[in-house]
Image (tube, rainbow, N blue to C red; front, side, top):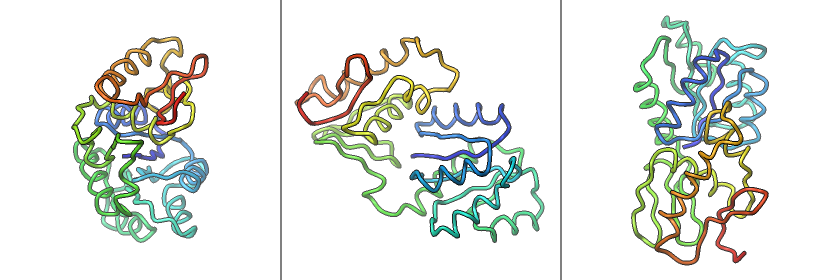
Length: 226
């Protein structure tokens, strides 16, 4: 599942990015309302998690702007304002769910996953396929040639990002920004280790090979001969 997080508390952002990714989800995060709205309008997400009080355009304005543009990406509002009137205001502004701070991550995760299931526009947008390799974003299942492939959460995020960018070169920097935390050292071998593990699971016992190393550039998922 792909999540857009709009939150200006740096500690909260780092915690939520790590927690969502450890749960097998892909997260993009921004700290300002205008940037969040712009990203939501040009990218595709299963769910948005929006802090109500953010710099510039506030969270409710971001959601109402998205609805005015005709987009119905599910939005869960996070806020320290938890009174009944506050929750009603948030839902009437276009929010689909409202969770008051402080909260337990397990509840936030359950609510986000429920929104994704409830508002899923169809199987075609929750499943990605390249040749005989299939990935289901909601069930977290991966199959190749009908065989179930067991992946760790980070491996699942890595594969999902590569498959969403199928037939395109994905650089190490792109992987660090979208699959790992932003502060990772670009020279770390964590990418090489995970790519090697992923390749052994999705390519070793199958043909043709789908995960390619593009020397000097990055990596690519493709069923086209290289």
